[in-house]
Image (cartoon, rainbow, N blue to C red; front, side, top):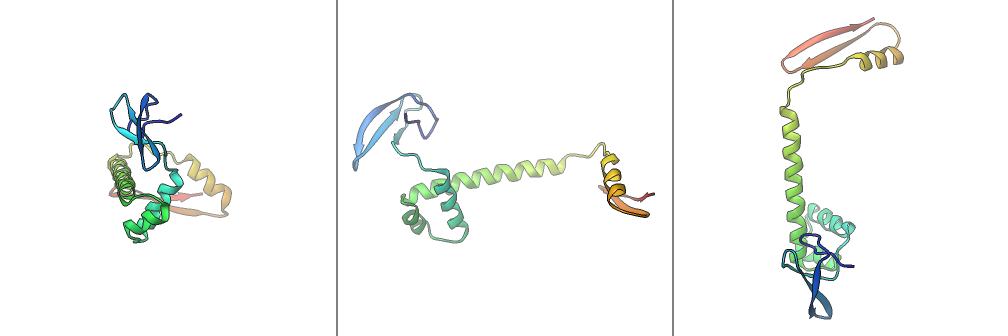
Length: 132
């Protein structure tokens, strides 16, 4: 069973064919879509080739799709990267309220011999730790 490439719905009807390939229209979002869905491996390969500075039309020929499809994949990947970047930036802004040193102390004591020193840096403050 086919799914709408725009909204993921399984509620659609036939809408003829173009160049021998069947077309469908989604009843939910009213968008037209084709029968085939491209694999994630093919999309990843196209994005990888783009990162390696391969031309859009050449990527399309290699993957067997049109250049407009390749551009859509690249734009979608770019939006995903921007979202991930924003999420990482947001995590950087969070303040550290509590730090547990139990596990670090246990790890250091278990894996070393003799006295050990460490430097704990939190924001602008730093503390020299002496582990006996």
